[in-house]
Amino acid sequence: MSHWNYRIVKVDGELKIYDVNYNDDGVPTSRSVLPSHFYGDTIESIREQLEWFQAAIEKPVLSDSEIGTTNHEQSSLESRHDA
Image (cartoon, rainbow, N blue to C red; front, top):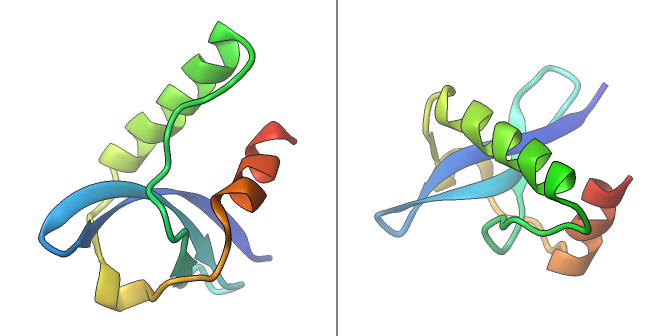
């Protein structure tokens, strides 16, 4: 089953956290166009996102050339986080 998570990706020499999508084999296939950021209606939702960002730090850094870029708009990514 395909899934996504936050990952640190090296883009143009800078490390940024992105939403990364994976195929059924766990291979990164795409990333969000814009870096991820914190947002939410409650402190708890921000705290949960912070934990997800911290989990990204524990994983190896991905190179942008390893995964490519999606055409997702940032607003469509926000709807995933609100679910």
